[in-house]
Length: 455
Image (cartoon, rainbow, N blue to C red; front, top):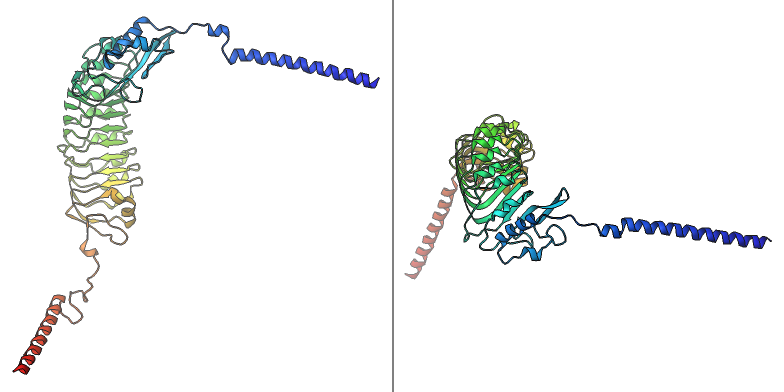
């Protein structure tokens, strides 16, 4: 009885285990249909569509840059879905796909590259959801092309980034109509062949965060209207032919971290208002030989965020103020190739973050009173040569290259007494001459005796 009763118990447990196994297996299979491979119903769901007009505009716009041989409709029938185009991105708006990013140029191996006869197509402005438009190395010098002067207002509500880089054939003026791109946050036109003035209309781009127009042939003044770009973080107008004073309206750019105006022909001196720009980290004005003026004697402690100050070759005169040592984050200081005079403040060596300092090519005088440890730490990143009246008081353990040791810091002469005499009371030159004379007399005496013996 006990054995039979135990057998029935084992059978019941086996049946219960099988039922539980089937139950959990069914749940797992059901979950896999829901979360793993798509269910038949999900697979049958139609993909989001793309407007035919947007497809046609995209194919035409790209084709005008990469050449007529490019057959976009055949190669990429679903550009926002199954057959994406390298450099093109799309976003959904109300269940419909729209191209939002177009980037052309040899950035990646499979990137779209421009044909030798690339041009702008009017259909480009039909991409009504376009957020970013970028071209790199698209227009060679053999294909001079101008930026379209009109139609930019059609992208005013969407375009946030406009970048044209390294296009020697991109010539002519910057269109004033770009100032109508109300949503623009980044305008980068670098290393092209653009000429003419910087359009004052750019000052109306209220959302602009980055303005980079370097490496062109732009001329005329820096527009005062740029002071209206209250949210601007970076302004780079370097390597152009800009003239005139740095407009005081720029003082209102409280968020600006970079002001780069290098390699132009600006005048009017270093503006004092830069000391009131609290966010400024990099101030680069070098190679404006007509800028002139002097360094402000006070107020440098206000520039607590400044890390780079490049004022080389700007025609500065006057002295280096000791107050420049009050900038706690300054890492790079270049004052070389100016007309600065007077002594070098010893406190400059105590700048807590300094990593490079260039004072060469001025009229500085007096003794450099920096420590040997400073020279050892800085190495070639400190330069003070080509200052004829400058000398160094430090000799033991380190000294700056190309700077003579101050006369009162030289070791005493090794020839004897401090009046320059040797141990016998004679100057070294005189002692040497007397010894030579004694040798000469002795030689003649021996010669005369030898001749007498022959006679």
